[in-house]
Image (cartoon, rainbow, N blue to C red; front, side, top):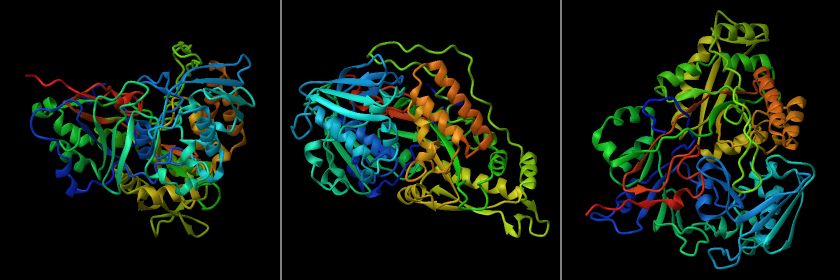
Length: 555
């Protein structure tokens, strides 16, 4: 997809710091390129850990995809493809999924990969001490995992589980290095050992993570010699590093894209790899009664009506984005997931649509607030109920340009409605800790769902409130029942009907205000080829970066 000003969608890769002193050291050599070469990519935020199970933030996942392998993966078009599992089959009753593993695969330290590593990874995901937020919920339906031999894994489910196959898109741990060690403090959490196309070399905190090609890889060996994740603080810093040939890829802000898209020299040096990803921003309203504002669905609906999301996309994002109506809008209709590699999924008939976004309507928002008892005090200009002013704090990620810009616009829109919103800017680790603990009133966040509607389970099911990703503390018996049934239902049409019920319920309850998805305007150095943009960028699919190669240099 060439962006060229067309509305699109974008991933939440929020850029983090690049040490200026390292830039010269990361410059590419002058003169003709040799075969191989190095590719430098701006890492969005520095990972807290490179443990394959507990590291589930976007930065960690990007590194994992290159260092480790999963049993199955998805290609650039989100179709399921084999990785460490060469084949698989599902039993007639839909309750047993059997994987047949590749033979001869070895970890980077030379140890053989076996079914024991798969079972060990599953056990660590299910261990509460691992804090595998965003992973464990997908394995709750598993009854047991059997390993009858070194190349067979048999997964038994308590009942049919529709997203069973995709749930195994998790990187596999080396059991021989973690077993018996302190899982949270193991050395491999900062120097990971996997079976993937790249080997870990070094991690300089606050600076970069360096990988090198795994010449013993079981699949296609990478053509580039090394891959460097450079910790980069902002779009401005990334653009300057890109122009100085110190980065080979960068995301551009809407303003940067507008300024460069007609620049002939820029177009010669860089290839447009903008894409339409699975991603949306949202505000979680903590509705568990821990604050006096957001337990009432009418108030939450008023908050959504008060935010001019369409205006933000049009003016701030220069039209590069769209308003989000529902967390399911790109996950429905459902295509039946193939259980045999290469089998075609049976797609539903076209025409089923998500609901239209709630329109910007501050007058309607005011009426809802009045009815809820939050009335405007003409003396102060703010709303209050029983003597308490409507004044709350929104948590945001300080390093995210979209976070900062949208929160400032929202602050002014709510002020005009008589609501006082303070903005608390936090670094990623602190924000994540606050979200998990529930110690906040409202928070701006984003989610990159897997290409199955069950990936929203962790955001909405009440079982995911404590330590999970249900940051709004949304608790609704009907929603829980429909989400649970959606997991058990294999028929695609019946599954869609269940998730449509969830959609309708969310429109009423508004546990979150679903905001917008900004398009990714991204460019790749013209020196490289071999990758294509996908809904998850140039790295979020298989083989992704493993297929990067230098373009031949003309004589």
